Image (cartoon, rainbow, N blue to C red; front, side, top):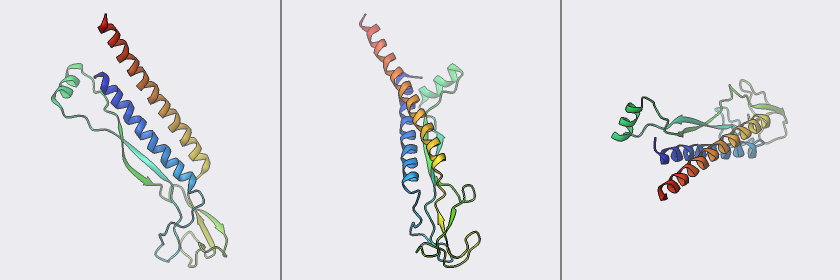
Length: 164
């Protein structure tokens, strides 16, 4: 693996964790959003749904030198991470909270499975889960910054040796 390859892997992690932090911020900001403009088939409003990033390994570079290097060293070196999609957490995994408020314009006007008339569906965002995810994303970001700084330090030392 080249020196710049390790920097590329760290930078992909930084980008992915930054996006994850953006999604967490959006989830927290919309913790009370009960109207998204979407309606159920019965005409009841659908609240904001929690969003999460789905990470996958980046596909390997198809250059001959990379393939040869992996085969010669006998190891499969990672290529970083990328976000394959941003998905909403289905309400079956994290159900919407229900609050009885028949005076609200977002209250169910027609009974549906899981929501009686007069109840408002609140978003499936849990502040504790979001805070735990935020700490995890922050720590992962810090780890990638540390790895990037070590790579930069190694490159600097290599240049100093070359001056010799």
